[in-house]
Length: 104
Image (cartoon, rainbow, N blue to C red):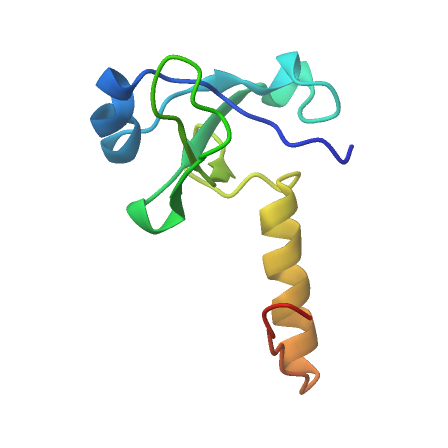
């Protein structure tokens, strides 16, 4: 629905989040998942890490951009990142190449 979805965790849970993931209820996020597919697992890695310098209320804050998975470990089909990846694969199969140019 055009709004960034997020799960907030304390730094003490970061190692667990990176190793095992942190489950969340997708049905509680408007426009994300129906109750029947509500258990979701964000998958993140260190390459998706960045500090958020403008949000320093009481300490450092960072974000991890994640793909979302179902309890079965399958990519969640409603995840916008999954949709983009699938679209990129489809256009690549048609012979198109994506070229990113910073500042464009």
